[in-house]
Every structure is written in structure tokens, then in C-alpha cells.
Length: 404
Length: 146
Image 1 (cartoon, each protein chain N blue to C red):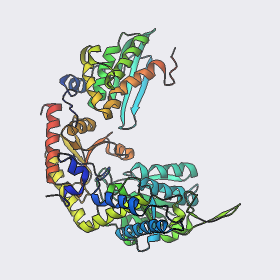
Image 2: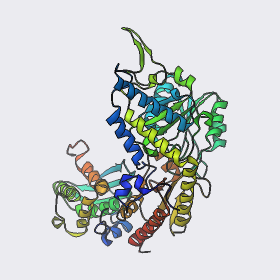
Image 3: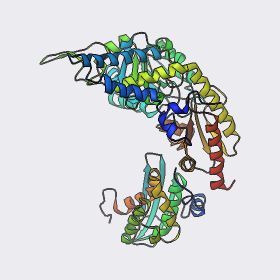
Image 4: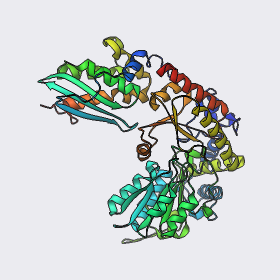
């Protein structure tokens, strides 16, 4: 199973031919296509968009608008004005909780999240509940780590204002059924807010037919730059909700006493935008589209299945998350008597990068009954030799620790 | 890529497998909890003070080999020491794991932690027990406890 793309496309991987990068769920490496597009914006069309009366500023505005159109197409959003550029998933989810939430959730209402949320889709809702006096409910998980839709169906009521859930767990790789969860939320008039940080990089999203009211994603996990991301939302909700931040660009008219808001998407993008970040994300979308998201998904699932099957044969290993079921390219595991941090350090000695820790999912760690896991994750540039290196590395760490 | 072979020596692995001074301390006069918010490691430290002297020390920890072995060796190293002597050992250890002191200043197993200086992301594991001891002895605000 060779990589889907040449390693030479990725300068960092090309410069480090022996590096085994298995931490793409934390952040992905960058192809030349993305780096070149960002550099070209700075070198060819750089000015502040939406402002200047001169041609260069108009070109910058065009680059920004073109990036939005590309990103909209990639995510299956027919109306590019429903694509809000943000700093990333955390920022996107804070926009929803902070702006829509404060305006629409009150004492006696209920907010439901799942027990497998990244802190980015947990803490903003928990804090909103504490601020407003709303009830904060954590939906249980199935033994494989999926949101338990039967429990969710029983939990929701007319008091439920929002159900916030992940598309794909960043720890377990479990892929939730967005349509089904959104339908349960809509059945009681609640909003469905989906954290797509681990979904968008790995499978086709198709937002307009997905069912979710909001979908959040980060550019840096899908070959794009850090500090860039999107919030996708339904037009009527984006129009009705107040802005999260106020300032430049997002206004229509500023009076001495009151201010009126700009139209979508600008209303939700206060201040000078991160145009290079948007251009980089658009280039990443084009790069992924050229591969084909169906191929991306099947490549990762084949790799993670190979890794699962091979790691499962190592004595003393516990694998978390779906057993045999469909999972994204994320594998969390524990090796008996070796703490994940020690394992990560010993693997690092062999040039293998894995993540060890709570993965910004402490509520999930409690539900798994562990304080940390080791996590390997795959992407378009991963291949079976990476799995072999990982398996050999785990065996070697065991020899150091338990003399096995 | 760090050379970790100098760090994961038998002495460290042994203290991880069979930590000394492990478990709650009967007659403790002081208990302090330390957490490492980045990785979720937790440690509880018990001290039995006799006047100005640490008569006995013990700990319980969930964490990596580096943090457990460090706590195990630390409790052994500070037993019988005065507050002032313990504070000096703490300072020395911090210097050792951040590459500001030589291992030759240490006797016994603690030398092994010189290897942490090459792994900046693991320094926090090595110093967890020592920060907890410092908090127990002088308080988090740095005010000496009576």
C-alpha cells in the first residue's frame, strides 16, 4: 500500500526521508501546492481586501472570494456566503456557542454534547450552560465509542436547544452518523452542531445534504495552514444570529448610537481577514479534490485496518474504539506497563511521531478509564511501511520496558 | 530524534515497576497533590514532618515511568533532610533536568535524569514530584509554612 501522493510533494517529508509521521490527526504536513499558493498571494496580489479603491486591493478581494468559492464547492455548500472563514475549528465552535448560543439558550433549556467530544466542542457548551443556567447533558457512548443514538433519542426533549457532536472522534476514529443525530435534534426543534475537524480532511462532507445546521473544520488538519478554518452554517441561522465579534468589515453603517451589520459572510468576519490562510485552505481543497476524497477515505481505512490487525497481535496491547467497524485513520492504543508518554519518547528515538496524552478529550479519557492513550494517525502521504515502523517500534519499546 | 538509551536505564525502569515509598503514609502531617495538566499525570505526596525535618515521605502516582521513578527516588533522597536541605536538592534537580547542572553533583540513581535535559517535552514529567514537594514545603504562594 503505497502513499496516495508523492512524498516529494511535501517539502518537510522530502527533507526528512526517514521520518515516520503518524500524527496527522493533530496536524497534517503541507504540500508545495499550498505553500506556493500562499506565497503567490503575497507576491502577486497582496493588499487589504474589501477596502482599497485601487486595482491591487480589488485583486486581493478577488483572491479571497475565489478561495471562498473553492472551499464552498469542496464542502458541498451551494451558497458560498454560508462559508464563514475563522481561525479554525475551536474558533468556529466558539462563534456558534458564543453568538448563537448566548442569543438562543437560557435558563431551563438544555445543551447536549457527547462523551467523546474534543474540548473545543465541550468546554464552550459547558461554559454557556454555566453562564445561562441551562442544563448540560453528556450523551453516553456505545462500547465502540460512537454517540449512542438510542440514549440520545431518549434524552432529547422540547427543552433541548442544541446537540453538539463530532463527525469523527479525534481519539477513536469512530465515524458518527451525522444525518441520524441531526434528525434526532431536529425532531425536538434543536440545532445540530457538528465538529468536523476530523471529518473534513478524510471524507466528503456534502454539507447541504448532511443535515447538520453548523459544521466546523480546520485548514491545518487538511493540508492547509494553521490559523485558518471554516464555519459552515444554514443561511437563515447565520442571518438571524448576532455577530460574535464586532469591528471593521462586519458593519453596514456605524451611527453614534447604534450600528447595523454587513451581509453574510462579512457580518461574521470582523477585522482584516486571514486571506493567505483562506487561499492556502482553497489550495488544499483543490489538492484533495485532485486525489478524490473517496480515494483518500479508502486509503486511510485500508491503512488503519492493517495497523489495527498488526498491533492487535502484539501481546499486552489494548486497542480503543471501533472493533472491525468503519473507522477513520486514527488508532488509539495502550501497551501494558508502558505509559503512552514513554512509548512516544521511545518511538521518537526511531524517528516515529505519534501523539501521547489525553488528546484534548479528558471527558472521553474518564469514560475509557485511562489517563492517556498512544495515538497513531494516517493521511494521504502515509503508507504500509509506516505501519511496519510503528509495529517494530512498539515491539522494541516492549523489549526495553518489560524485556519481552 | 533523541537518544533515549541513557534515560531508560534499568534503574529508572526498576523504580517505575517497583516504586519505593509508595502508598499513603500513616501519621502524615502534610499531603500535597500535583497534576500535570498537559498530560493528565497525577501525584499525591505525603510528608511526616518532625519539627523542621522530613521524617518520612511517600507518594502515589499515575503517570509515565519518568514521573514515577522521579517521585520514587525523590522520596528516598529527601527523607531525614531539613526543609533547607530539601529545598537545595530540589533546586539541584531542576538544574539537572534543564541541563544547567552536571550529573556528577548527584549520588545514586538521580544521575539518570540528566538524560531528560535532551527531551524538553519530558522535563515536566521529571519535575512533577519535585514541584509537589516544593509546594508542600513552602506553599504554592512561596510562603514558608510553619
